[in-house]
Image (cartoon, rainbow, N blue to C red; front, side, top):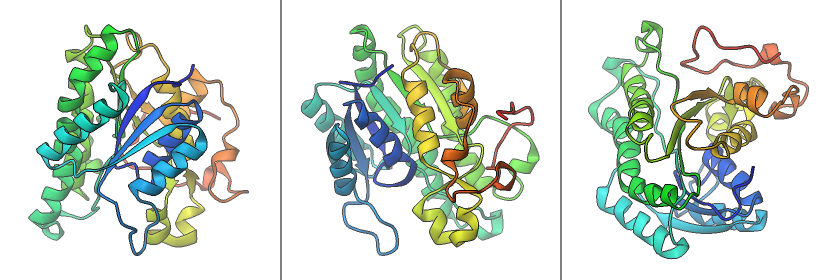
Length: 287
């Protein structure tokens, strides 16, 4: 159950959940490409493609930073070419890059709509389209290829659309890629799954938006990283087409029973955590 020697292409992994997934893979000795837009430090948010790769190599992996806007087809094509030339192929695609605006229709202008749908739905589709030929080669070589997209279970209840329809369309567009690709590439032996958190995740962006009060209601990004690792080490011909929730994956597939180590603020009770958006009605309990 290791990612040693595997090559991961992660979009938007310069910080947060994407970086946490990269570092977990690096602990196994994986090769990790960080394809993101942040090459220079953000005035309010830590992390760049270069600092992420430094952390990857310190953790035991090999990294490659690539400046890439996944809305730009040619940039994605060139990034994948560079990744393949450097590491010899791609075994895993992690669609992590995403944009968010929890605003109603009249508050969401077309620039913001295009940003969310360009990065989330279109960027996921584009990254998959360019990486899949290399994942097919990985499958033919018996290297257990996976696509993992950080997007929610498909749930058509109006409550998930009314307050922020543009954002919901963009995130569900990512999930539709999972649904379609799992079926389209099943015979190739490429696993395609989605992963979503049960609770808010404590990232620098969350700290900036909600401060300590929101951080106290969140879990750390490590729960997503550990869940991603479990998914990415499952047999690709057997585990595909799933919309996974982080703690359910860890509970059912890795036997985790104590989730207290994942709370962002020690001492926070499970009942105090903030549920994330898009959670299904029949979500299994892990308590």
